[in-house]
Picture 1 (cartoon, helix red, strand yellow):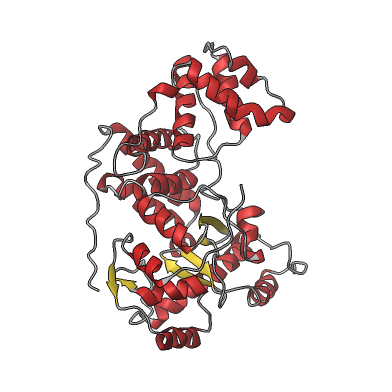
Picture 2 (cartoon, helix red, strand yellow):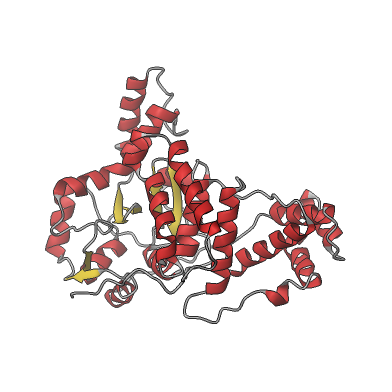
Length: 388
């Protein structure tokens, strides 16, 4: 599948999006105010970002940048964080972009050269929290990026898709378009992990029952729109076969060669049907998309984090997006999300290491696994009311 051409955002559509965001809304920024913000901070809003802010200005929490009354120092810092995050990885983690000139041997010289290179790339402009849009005047349809140093992922095909994904759990199943060469490197060729791509967990089943459960969880992930690499389906089938799970199509799935990977999805579906798993999948019968499936998957992902099959950062991001965000931000998952935010917070990273910040995520996963499940899913964060 390919992403459709970008469609200009209308003021009416922008107001519809703002009804989804559960934030206070002030009057939209006028053309004069938007121009003044751009002149003061030295960047340009993309066209859809400009229309969105003209329809209404979200405020009331630090997550939404307040371009009208916000602290100038805070706004400047948020604008600088993507570049400073790359420089942090240049200094501490040896990062060097392949399009740059050869890396100097000394760290001070490397930082100076990297800063010069970064001065030429498109500015990233904060939309919400650590979600950014490329700031290119007059252009529509840039994907929204979630940015933590050089850990950068797609979080929406465009601004409208991002709002639906972040605040309602519904989003396009089409792949995002790469629109800015430098920043797109990180989601296609660099260290970032796109949340729309297959979940990077590894199998751990040791019994036939656990192998069947793994197959069911892969089915649930597909149910809510997650993708899988063919080898993940084949590997799950091979594990089940070795553990003596009986299904007619299982040997066929497990025995697929690399040239036969295109058959994996169809054979996986046959295995599900033969094991009676397909008919037992939960229905999408509530106002929250695939609510029952998501609660079951959150429990599964917590187990994978706790047993080391899913990295705490990647698993925490996944639960934040596909669980907490899509389920209406239930309070029961709030402590885990707080720990994931700390893990992803650039200032916190500068003061410690990611290994140290991963421990609390694992500990919270273990705590949740000991509690009754599912938790009180109705306990959701209060919705902020618009004052517009």
